[in-house]
Image (cartoon, rainbow, N blue to C red):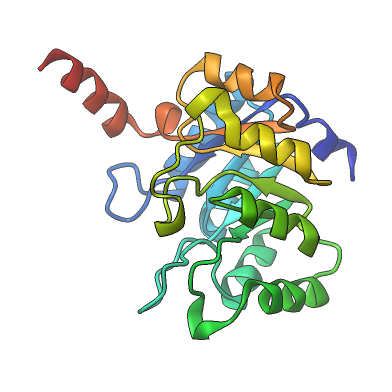
Length: 228
């Protein structure tokens, strides 16, 4: 693994994403958001779509975790769900490509095992991150050979609806760290500096923080709710 990726150890990765229905949806704005994150001390960026990633890479020289969020009819998986999204990302050259690695249904009924095998065969030198929602999914992704195991989807799937990543002092994260061979990236509802520091103390390789830094509408809402 190259030194740029090694440099993420113990550091903050900022997720700079805005979906089409959000006020900040713009590759230009996400590029500036990434620049602001870098100025604040971020060591990496997580971003959505090849357009945003290309713009971000024109603004900052930081490792990027790339995804494409796309909905397919009758399918719960929306993070880099098919080879089409992987091919698009490869045009932008993110250092790591993340994909849904849950048991949820994939487009065309394809299993994660088959999909990951196809992707690794086509792009053997690319680094991949597994976005998981349960301990079992994380262990399976580790066996499949993902380079990074992420807690991204905890609480966001049917099978994990009852789980929260920060519950019982990050018990899920601690168990994953203890049982997998590959590096674990903590992500999902890590919304304070204290929580970010704690996941690193517990053995996460690095930590991704998104909405609480880069989604002003959600940050504003939390203040408004506190006042109501």
